[in-house]
Image (cartoon, rainbow, N blue to C red):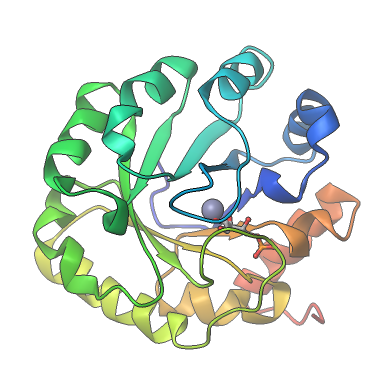
Length: 228
Ligand code: DX5
Ligand code: ZN
């Protein structure tokens, strides 16, 4: 996992060409990406349906990227084992979707994956307070989940800042991921607030070439002027 030294960009496949997933993964790897973000949606927890564990399993054989799997599904504990066996390196479940969250986080770790919890925009940070010591990452949703291309919710930056204080206060090693409406324009403020991993779908895939896009995001994270 990241040692907090540099921003990790995790492109969301939701904005990729679903008809060429293996090619898209190869292109990300060739462009220098290390992580890729899988937005799994069930049409119940969110009003959209994307892909499941079989698709991830099929792609696992074709990619060396770190599979950052974001489960936007009801009762995700039912599927943790299947996604871990499919090759997820990290499994992120929504606090709002799981009655017994601590049990599901423990299950993710037992299955050998890194464990993360996602918080919708309205969800207060104290929901994860007691779990921070056992989390590898907390995902701060900066849009309401379900779709790419939405506008960044501005209070997300302060939420990241306050989460960073909570993590530091308890000595947790949990990374902070921000997901939704991330762009070159808000990358610097999010990194300065404490974000370690940024998810980008439309702002990343929408402006190829991918290697140049990655370079721009990394430059923006360092505070260099890159336009928007
Ligand atoms: C939304 C997903 C996000 C989304 C990001 O429910 O969790 O990962 O795909 O896409 P952009 O960067 O376009 O907001
Ligand atoms: Zn996501």
